[in-house]
Length: 121
Length: 384
Image (cartoon, rainbow over all chains, first blue to last red; front, side, top):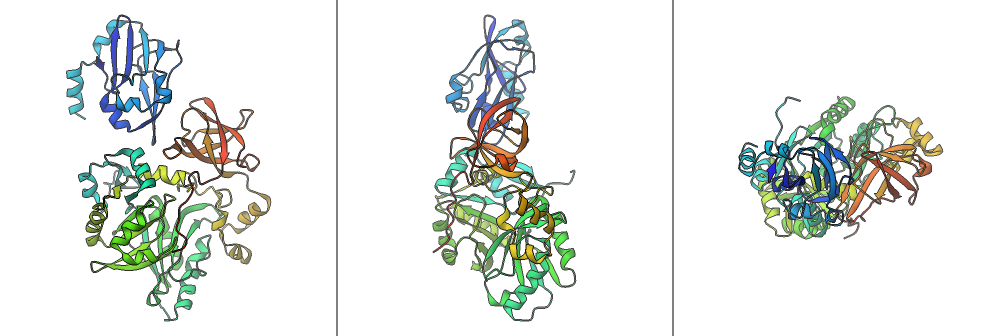
């Protein structure tokens, strides 16, 4: 699993990456009450808005950490957005991207680097 | 904007309780505690929440020269304030509070506020006023200018203002202030507690029964801790305060109402004293009377968002054909209803409950319906 400074995680299997938000992000967001997911087939570039998570208080963007095409979304979140809080780094995933360049993922932080980054916040 | 943030007297208690502190109206305030907005909101609806609202603007307006005739002194101090506001203050009974509006010359709403008449005979000729945090400097200056030479405004915003709200608030507060049980909604009295005088008002901003307590600074932390020692009470941040007041259909100044909006447009006609409107002397009287007779150009309405994401402040409201007809002024997710709700402005022809509208969130039209407010029924205690 790799991580961004915007608190997304990404896990690559072949040329498909699963993307979600980290436990830290889920904690910061508070109770998630709605998740807006992208359409399957949408192409996103690095840093494009991939999804929107809404808490009682505010809406927050989830950005694409890498470029690719959306090949699946986590439809379960429509009925159970609280999964993002309960299992942010597993069942609370948002979308799967078919990567343009799988090696781009290696530029992102590994867990040790991300944990160190969290210490600086 | 570079000024350091002010802290309320309860600041350290919030930090110790794990609050997330944010800048709000010049103060560093708890937006939520460890429970988070959703649980804090639901706790308040089920039990009792304690809110630090010491950032607001409580003050006392007192006649320079009182005659000792309580009713005459009340009429005299009311006559000084009334030219600035929409309501009838002279008609308040001892101990009664009224929600009213501070108006500009065009009848636009500068602020919404509470004005109370003291209960005690020896305190007549004085008004207890609580204005909003974000506008308090301007409000105080405006009132001071209007009463100069005849009355004095004494700020009380160095004290603590603590709200206790929820179905168990009355039982909790009765344990600390036994006489508070005698109050009904929108009344107040001064109650001694541990040798200090507190002003206890049965009022609030959540739609629940509850109290707002003005406590002297040395006493405030002990009072806060005493309230929180009751297991029915949890501390509630500004995040849940906002979602609670939205469910209660109560406007937030600077968002749902501002200086461009009249009381009639804001669906706050109840706060306009009709005898004062007829008699003249009400700021913006011509506009307000015209809007009452002919209808306003727009009206504050409640909306249930029937699909999709919450529609938040700034989102456009469209009619069935897709034409933009208004804008959301506050909106979010209602924890009580488990669905998004909002308030905003729509033309009167589209303001009747049941009217189908659209809200446009991130470019997507979503179905919405005009709904009577409050979204969640008020539970005020009007008789004891």
